[in-house]
Image (cartoon, rainbow, N blue to C red):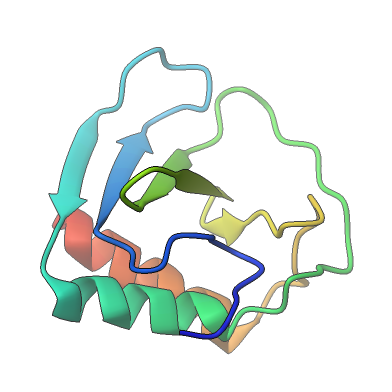
Length: 115
């Protein structure tokens, strides 16, 4: 597997997705753990199509929907965050609205959550 800017596990053994109704909530409203390699590969493939640098900074209120995706390896994990359906890139910026790859990834995340 090629080196990723999004995660460091190789191989990645699981993905935990937690949906919070509000970023300020202490516990997730819904949580799912993916362990099937096909599902993990589909999400990681979609994630790799997202540019690692966004082009804008955004400030959200604590009431915004928050989704945390934790990618697990045997001895390490990485976190990818979504605020109101928008991915926070590794350089802590966001993409301009309308990015199809971002929308496709978030659709996979919502599908995994059963939404």
